[in-house]
Image (cartoon, rainbow, N blue to C red):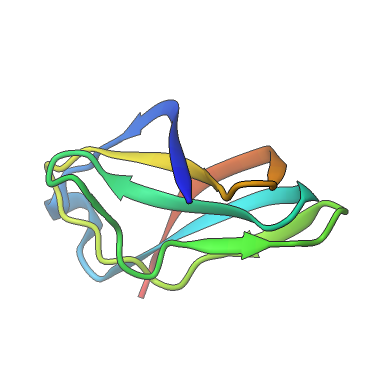
Length: 100
């Protein structure tokens, strides 16, 4: 899979988000093959655990990641992933926080 970062950068202050669950919520579709999306920690150069979802559906699909362990003071970006012979579209994607 080849990963490409979208432009928006996310960061937050940990003290403002105590007892909070984070999820990556996106609307995506595959044009061909399987289309992937995830959150990537640019501070530590690692994908975020439980953030990746994918679809092979050629219609718009609402996708929810698992709960993600984000760390305050780090920087994150949403990435799209494409395998050889696949392509897709992101209609919208964002990180959501909700109290646990």
